[in-house]
Length: 399
Image (cartoon, rainbow, N blue to C red; front, side, top):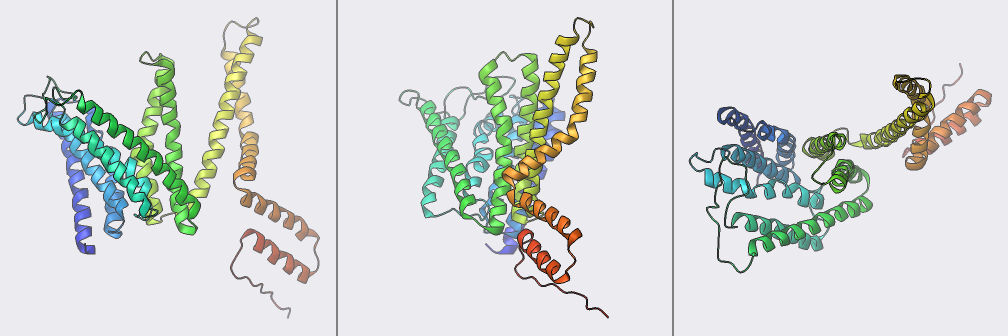
C-alpha cells in the first residue's frame, strides 16, 4: 500500500467514526434513547491517534488496530440506539450486529496491541501462535453469540429473536463455544502482558521509553480494575451507598484511562511527542499516590482518635475534623519532601545520586581556590551526572 493510499484510507476511517459519533446523539434525541449510548465520542482518542499513526507509518499495525476498534465502537453504539425501538425496519439485523460487535472493538486493542506495540511487529515468529490463539478466541466468541438461537441479549423495548440463530445443535454448543473463546482470549491477554514485559527488558533507548509509556498506563488502569473486582467480591449485587460511590469513581476512572489515557500514551510513544517525560510522569505518580494514601490515612486516624478524646468534652465532631484538617495541612510539605526523597532513592537512584553529587560539589566550590583542581572536579561532576559522550572545558585566559 502506497503512502498516499494509506493516508487516504486512514483519514477516511477517521471521518467515518466522526460521522457515527455525530449521528448517535442525534438518533438518541430523535428516538428518546438512553443518553449514555452517546458516549461513542469518548472513542475519539482511538480514532485520532490511529489515523495519525496509520497515515504517517502505514506499515505499523498499531494505527490500523486503533482505527478498526474505533469504527467498530461507533457502529456498535449506533446500532444499540437504533435497536432500542424494535419496531423500526431492520431492527433485528441491527440487534444482531450489536450483539457481537463488542468483541471487535473491545478485544482488538485489549488482545493484540500489547503484542505488536510499538513497532507494529511481533517479538519473533514464535509469537504468531499467540496471535492465532487470540483470533480463535475472538472468532469463537463472535460465532457463539452471533448464531445462538433464541432472543438476542440486547436492550430493546421488546424481545428480538436472532435472525441467524442456528438451532438443533448438540447440547448447549453455543455456550461452550463462547466459553472457549473467553478462555482463549484470557490466555492471549496474559501472554500479551508477558510480551510487553519481555520487550521492556530487551529494548533500549527510544523503544524502551515507548514501551514504558504503554506499560505505565496499563499498570495505572489496573488500580480501578482491582477496586471494582474487590467491591464486587465483597458486596456482591447489594452494594452499600458508601461502596457505591467508590464503585462509580473506579468505573469512570477505568473508562477515562482506557478510552483517553491509553490512546494518548500510544500517540506520545509512537509519534514521540514529549516521549522522554515518562520518567517525570512515573515519579510524580508514585509521589502523589503515596502522599494521598499517607495524608488520607493520617486524616482518618486523627479524626477517629480526636473524637474519642474530645467526646466527653464536646457533643459534636466539628472540632475533631477541624483539628485533623489543620494537622494534615501542616503535614503536607514535609511529607511530600520525605516521600520524594524516598521515591528517588528507591526507584530513581541515578537522579538521587546526581543530586547528592551536585550538593557535594557546591560545598567544595566554596572552599576550592585552585582553578585547575576546580576544573578537574567540574568535569568529574558533569561526567557522573550528565554522562556526555564528549566533554571539554574552556577557560577564559587572563588579559
